[in-house]
Amino acid sequence: MKKTRSFIRKETSFFFLLPLLALLFIPLALWSESSFISKEFSEDIPSAVPFFRSIVLFTALGGICFFFHYSPLPLLFSADKEKRIELLVAVAFTLGFANLLFGFITSFIGQLLFFVIGLLIQAIHEIAQKKRPQFSPRVLLLAITFFLCYITLSIFLAPDRTAAFSTFRLLIWLFVIPLLFSFYPFTKKTLQYFSRFALGVGYIYLLAIGTLYVLVSLQYHSPLDAAFHLDKNYFYTAERIAYSPQLLLANFGFNHYTFITYLLFAPLAYSLVEDQSCTRRVCYMVGLLLFTHLLQCRLWIVTLPLLIGVAYLHRLKSHKLKILLFLAGLVALGVLGYIAYTAHLFEDTARTKLLQIAFEKTKENVILGHGLATATPYLKSLGMWETHFHNSFVQVYFEMGLIGLLFTLSILALYATVCVKRKNFAGILLVLALIGLMTTDEIVNTTTLFLDVLLLTSLYLHPCGKQASCALQKRI
Image (cartoon, rainbow, N blue to C red; front, side, top):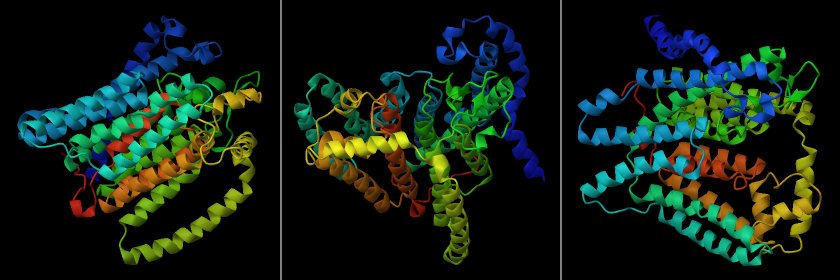
C-alpha cells in the first residue's frame, strides 16, 4: 500500500501545476491568434485558443517539474567521471527527443543540435582516452554508401534534375546520421538513462494530448468516446462540419501522428525488453495505445498491440510461453474476426488507386525506375492532389526501380541482422515498426520527420541484450 501511494504521488506530480493553468488564461487570451496556433484551426475555434495555448505552456511547465522530480543533476556532482559523461550524453539526447515530440525547434539544425552535442561529449571523452573511432556497424554503412551511389545515378535518369538533386540532398542524411552515431558509440548505461528519461518526456506528451482531447471534446460538445468509433474525422461543429483529430497536434511543431507514434514507441520498445520494473511502463503503454485511437492512426491501432505482444513473449520463459501462445492464438482469432467485421472502416480506396497507378507506370522501366523526384510531377499530371504514393517501398520502386527497392530491403535486413548479432531485441522491434511505417507512408516526402526517424533508429542500433545486463534500474 505504501508503494502504491508513493507511485501515485510521483506519477501525478504533473497535476500539481493545475492552479497555474487558470492564471495563464488571461495573459494568453491577449496574444494574437496567428502567433501560436495554425490559421487552419484558429479561425474556426477562437474560443478554444486560450485553452490550447495554456495547455502547451502547462505541458512545458509540467515537463520541467517532471524532469527535476527525477533529476539526474545531483548525480552529476557526486558521480565519478565515467558516470557523469554517461548522464550528460543521456540528458542531451533527452532534450533532443523532447524537441522531436514538441517541435520547439523545427529546422534541420534544431533537430540535430542536442543529439550532436551528446555525441560530441562522448567523442571528446573517448578522444581524451586516446581511443580510435569504431565506424560500426561497417557492413550497414557500406550498404548505405552503395545505395547513395545508386541514388546519385538516378538523378541523371530524372527529367527534372534540379528537383532530383534537392531530394538527394535530403537522402544524404541517410548516411550522415548513422555515421555520426558510429564514430564513438555511447555506452549501454547511457542508453538506459536516455530510455528512462525519454519515457518521462513521452509521458508528459501523452498527458498533454489527453488533456487537449478532453478540452476539444468539450469545445465541440463531442462525446468522450468518439475517438473509439474508428471515424477519421470525429470532431463536429454545430454546423456539422467535420474536423480531423490532427487538430490536437496543431500547437506542436511536428504534427504527423504516424511518425510521432514511432518516436514514442522507441523508448517503450527498449523498456519492454530490458526494464524489469513494469508500473511506469504499463502507464506509458496504455497512454500510447490511447494516443493511437485519439489520432485515429489505423496503422498503429493494429500493429502496436502486436509489437507489444511480441515483446512480452520475448520476456517470458518457456513454460509460460506455451500457455501465453495458446491464449494469444485465441485472442488472435477474435481480433481477426473483428477486423473482418470492421474491414470497411480500414479501407482506403484513394491509396489503393495510388498503388495501381504506381505499378502500371513502373512497368515501363522496372529495373531503373523513372528517376529521383518523378512521383510528384507524375501524380500532378494525372490531376491528383496527392504528392506521393503513401508507401515508401512503392515510392522507391517507382523512382529507382527494382535495384533501388532491393537496396532498401537489404539495408533493413542488415539492420535487423546487426540487432540479432548484438542481441538487441528492442532494435528488432523498431525494424518491424519501421517496416510498418514505410508500408503506409512515404518517409522521405515528409522531410523533417525523415530526420526524426533516422535519429531514433540510429540511436537504438546498439549492442544491448539479455547477456549484456541492460536491465533498467528503478532509481539511478
